[in-house]
Length: 501
Image (cartoon, rainbow, N blue to C red):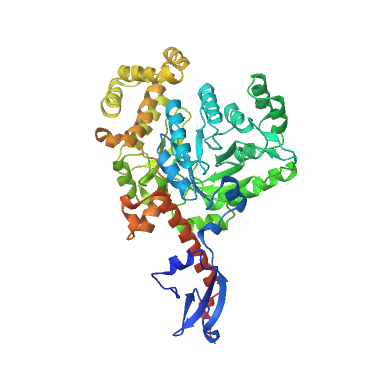
């Protein structure tokens, strides 16, 4: 395969066996060869850039990766243990979507991942949880299971539980190096949040953890010399929780901010910054790396893969999604504050229903205060049950996760209304995961515009078909294309195609 043409170009440019490529003239056209030919036909030679060359070498070394790419968490186990295992075995890393899962399920999935991967890389997601006790139990589980890294999502301020996971077990070795057994990769989309993860763990929180007997004085003393996170993912316009900000503006600005904050702190290791949100083509990967990303993170595109922990119906919908088929809608976990998630609008009434419930919540002090015709609409068309019955189901749930919430809601009719409405919003994502046909019009399918970009990009290739979308293959294709596009740009930038005798 000496020459690059339309059919074999990607294979040549992504093949690590060829450290150098040669540009040669054949029939007055420039072609790329893997072999040096006659001197009179040679135009130039360039290094062959392969997929594993991209990204920060320290990031890859620290996590044991071949490639500077990881699959981000998607809650309710959509980023499944099977997905994490497949990525880990292929030289990438995956983050298990622990958000919304019961502790015993998370424990079993960790066991499965560890049995399959051994010492290969993986992460478990810690999703910000206003129930501090539940979050602390998760942190304790992750410490007990010796989970090496977490992906921290949706935090505005690092919680005591996240700080406990980060600091527990740190020590100084004989050479004076601070060893941190628990790595943290934090997803952020705002400057003030990035600052909190670049700075050391909050001293007051560390003191509380020492007082509670969870950290030692020695661990607390070392905490002031490490950043809260090893790595920070700048999350742009992504599926699910997102501020919808453009990566091209955010990433360079937040990289510069991270550099500025940590410069005077004298850390032994630099806090690296990667990019997530909108990564759905080889060119988007390349753009992120060229802007300085230490690594890239995929999300929405993984949800349509074979290993994703969602229904075949949802995977089919995702595989047919266009960029214009997504919109913002109210979310369950931060419903009262008006927080929104990016979801699919095609084929579902979830965005409209969720918005209507939020409007009722903000306008009325209780469900009973809503006009009768609107109450009937909520019960018959959205809840498909009486308010009282749904409240009973909601109480059963909170009896397991936060019993104190029940008494508060019984005394506060507006909170009670919010919790019932959150029942619908919470169940809607589970109906999607389970593929409940009777609830197709109520499904909440998290999705960013990268899904539509990916579908357009792979149209006419084997990856157009849902059954061919294996998560490691998708990741490899993205980075191989990234390398291919880089080589194309290099040739075009120097206008080598116009070289003459």
